[in-house]
Amino acid sequence: MAGSSHGSSHGHTPAAWTGVIIAFIGFCAAGAFMVAAHPVGFWVSMVVVLLGAVVGGIMRAMGLGQSKDMHPVHQVAGKGEPAGAKG
Image (cartoon, helix red, strand yellow):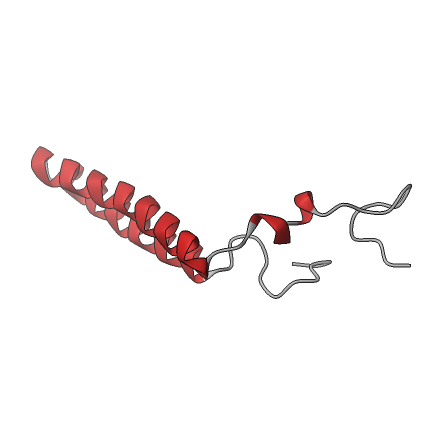
């Protein structure tokens, strides 16, 4: 994103991409099972959606996600200077 001084912007990490892709596949499958009136398949797909969050969290813990200190909200600027301002 514009103004980012670090290598990966918010959400553009392997952990984020993997978690979202897994959750998206589960969401699409849940929609198909719901239309097809297969409640067991729907609930299994909902578990896949939750699995996406778990996998993304594990990958972030392994160092494949964005660390909290790299996020612009957590950066502290000098006195009277907006965050991200360069002098």
